[in-house]
Image 1 (cartoon, rainbow, N blue to C red):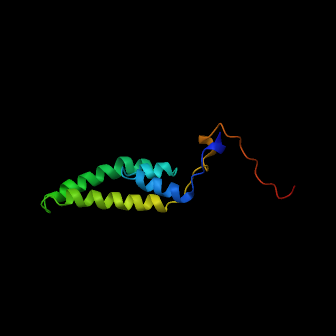
Image 2 (cartoon, rainbow, N blue to C red):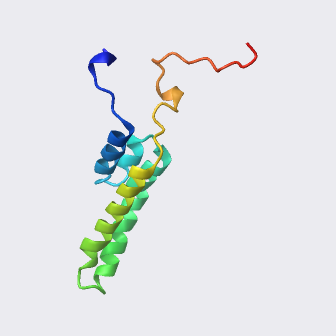
Image 3 (cartoon, rainbow, N blue to C red):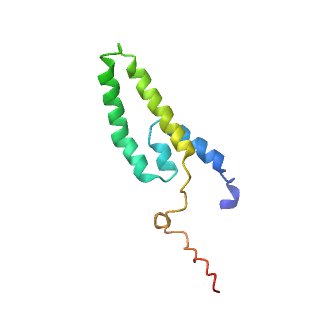
Length: 106
């Protein structure tokens, strides 16, 4: 079945992660950076909204557009640049057989 699906390259996975970061945190989750992704989804988005609304009082509402836009762009760039940890968490893929470690003494 895997032969019929074309392989997704690293560059494609980077682009997908950046696109998913339109909702900050999803790109990190896509690249299997779970702690950073959940942190951005919960705390990062709430804090960004709070700061944007608080700064709106002094910037005539301009920060409501600028702060979230800059935050989304920064998180998307970070998700694009992160190393892909897909396949590094073997306990999340119990259906795949475990690969034996390389034994240099054999």
